[in-house]
Length: 136
Image (cartoon, rainbow, N blue to C red; front, side, top):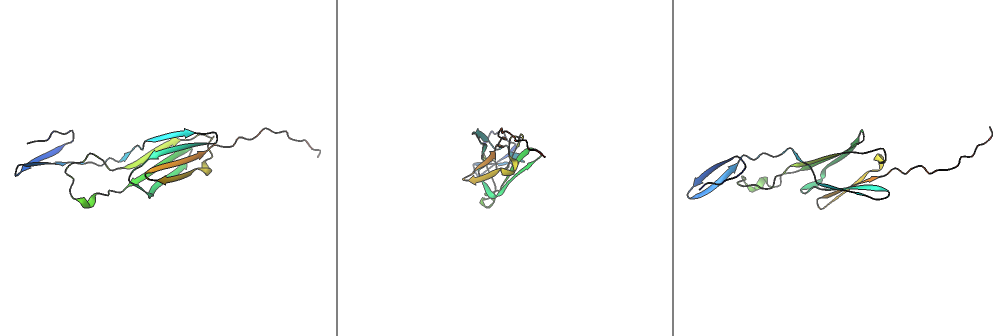
């Protein structure tokens, strides 16, 4: 009895039972799925990042680039050798170019239940005003 899979596998049958050992390759990182919302005063980036701990998230802004990196620890190491795997475990990475309309120093982030929310406040435009001219 042999198993057909798309992964490279070594199939072996012992005592009438067939098992397959996968050559499992952990991807370098996943592209975290995100939704972006806009209100009058901000943008909100919502990213699903299951399996990430708060300590494993790093968010930075440099040269108008918002970068989100999250490390996922392999929580199944103690369970034994993997015989079949459909869910890959990998880190998350996303980058977004932000424009001059974003107040980069006021960006904040919250993480709860595997969902990261990054709030990007818009720059408050200067209000038109009349400037009084004084004598020197």
